[in-house]
Image 1 (cartoon, rainbow, N blue to C red):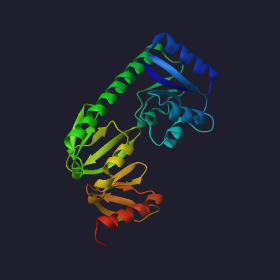
Image 2: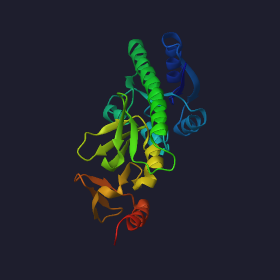
Image 3: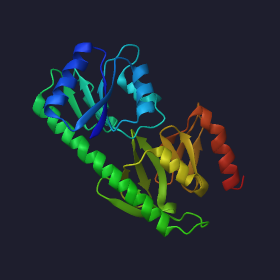
Length: 253
């Protein structure tokens, strides 16, 4: 069974979606129904759903703002809305699918099946990745290699090749020196925990950088880093002092 939360400010929307799921997607078990972003956030953090159906337009704040408030989310998302102009932004959050009201039963079934595959694959990948990491890194040794679960399986990479990690919803885009980017199935918070002791620093809610690959700092409100691949990474104002402290411990000034 897939644990799901439904979020829609219209009672008729919640009722219709729940009825459709009961009739066409019996593998989905609805564990909560919410009609606003505040309640949705509380239920998501408390109940740990695997799948969330999100109506984009909510009172007070929309679903995108709700997702921005979450420290991390490891659930799949299916956006549901009466409008289609948010499609591109929806997929910025790695949504499984995007359903326009009134919901078509066939499209709903297809979206749920895609979500089920991703949920199963993500769980398997994380277990395999954790296993490999534990058996390949001797206790007490400095981390030199990292096993990255991706949408296709997993890849083992040299940590010194990582330039920076970029958050993409519950996924992380990892940028390398001389290698193609990898989209990891784990959130950036996981990589922050793994890599902080390996010379990485979180300079923004969306960016974790390798101090070895910083080429230039450009002043600004928080500032901008130019990395070794000439890509620019934003530094948040509240992270600037942390960045400078870490750089002083890493480089000679």
